[in-house]
Every structure is written in structure tokens, then in C-alpha cells.
Image 1 (tube, helix red, strand yellow):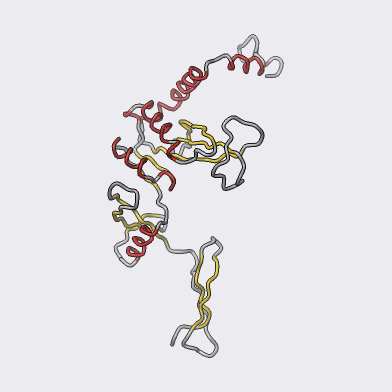
Image 2 (cartoon, one colour; image 1 turned 90 degrees about the vertical axis):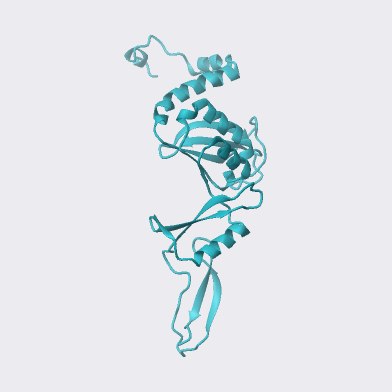
Length: 249
């Protein structure tokens, strides 16, 4: 604060940053974390009486210098660079962070984030649990889904495009009873039991019309019945098929 500001705020004096750091250093780590978490929960708890969605995410934070827990692990942005992994649990839409577990960079899988997730939920109390647990493909694994099913907590996770998922998608694409899902998307549900799953589970497939065609037709000057095809990459990085020439007739 500038000179005169403490008095304007109703304080006689304000301690320095170094004094605050020295004071915090004297607090036991476990007691300090419990004290801080209590105050954070107090700020968020009034919002949890309404239906809400809990988003879970894992973020890699590259590190420089000597820092506690800096380990080389999965790091797509800077391979080989030591990092931390932040397992974050936040309230969807509001993006209000309810908890963060800082783990070494080589502990980035959901196996290392589950303890923090269920600790957070049990601390909130069943009456304030989310209506839905939501995460990306990394969290759509058997241990997470089976635990959510045991606890009676609905979840929505993305699936990796494995061979079994691709086969189901190919089969469903030939069917016509797709349902409008909003914003140009169509949806269709089925059941799958993928490798490593303990049971069949409901799966929702989504599709939408591409903004531009992947097959470009150009009239052939001689009206040839055959057309040449060649593979090319789309702007989004996918592989598309382009057509040069004309269709038969």
C-alpha cells in the first residue's frame, strides 16, 4: 500500500511482504492447508445448492530451475522438460476452481488425480455433490467410471477413437434414426463394452455436416467415365479424398 492508504482503509499499519512470508513459514503445512481450504470452501459453498457440473482436467506446467517435485514426464509442448501436473476440479461455466492437486510431472494420469477428486466430493458432502462429473478422454477409464457408478454419480467422458469405437461409428453412420442434438449436431446412442471395461456402458455418438466438402468435383474436358482420386490433407489436419475429373455419365 502507498503512504496514507492504511489509514484510509481503517488500519493503523500494514505488515511487509517479508513479514507475511516469515509468518506463513511458521505454520504447520497440514494445519495451514486445512485452514486455507476451509476458507475457500466457505466462499464456494453457497453456490453448490443449485444443480452444477464438476469439470476435471489435468494440465502440464513446464518448470525451469530447481523446484520441488519437478519430474520429466508427459510434456507435449516441451518434451524432456521437467514439469508439474495440475489436477484441477472446477465448477463448469463459472470456471470456479474448487481444488487443485499439484503432482510431479510423471504423475499426470487420472490414477494420481482420483484421490483428490473423491476427497473434494466427500468434503463437500453428498447434498452438495454435482449433478454431473465431466472430463476428457484421459478420465474415461474403468477405475474412474466404476467408482462413479458405485457412488451413484452421473458422468460424461470422451472416448478415444479405438478400433471398437470406429467399428460402432461406421455401423451407426449407415442408419437413419439420428436425433437432432442442437447447433448442427446429430446424436445416436448405443452400448459398448471396450477392452478393460467391466461391463457394457451407454455411448453417445455425435456427428455434424462439414462446413466444406472433402470431395471436389471438376468436369473433365473429354467427358471421361473414370476419375482420378488423390489423397490430400485438409486444413484441420485430417486426411481427405479429392476428386479430379468427372463421374461416369
